[in-house]
Length: 257
Image (cartoon, rainbow, N blue to C red; front, side):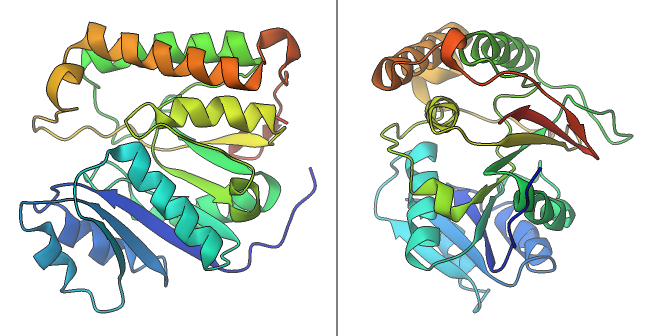
């Protein structure tokens, strides 16, 4: 597996109304990343005031809430425009461990995308996921594997790293939570090398909402299917044309490339 020099990296966090977590998470992120970006997706709960406590923080604010996918797309564009070599994305809800950021940066030397997997390896701090979320994850992951020739174990983990040069190949349009599904399709179409990196499965004991109708699991699943089918139609690919095969590479697991 050929490797590219890592160079400069940026850690980006899409944030919407995370006043209870953002301060603690950012304090930890700055221990492992010199350059940190928050995309504040129209927060109204005092998050912006918490961000002001970090003078070195780079902030892009959406005046109104546009969605998780839109926030990630803003982070992608920022990394491209500021000529970073690697972009790490990490959620701000306390479920990802910033101490693992260097692992994602290092793994990006040999892949266009490194995707965290909460189901690739057992950790002592693992917790039980909500049943409906786990069920949907299993179903969508299996469908992506079948349609795209992948061997994923976790289609939805937001802890990822990307080669920024590769991000310029994408043409993402989805603003909501299903944008990563559109990204899987485009990444395979572009021939990316993709690896999964194991991370602990951590769910906090607090209610988390997708917002509105998406809190209904059936509605959410229908939405995910709609985005996948649209993305496949745009790329004109399917399982027979996609990359196949997986090899183990240290603690990473290659799932495409």
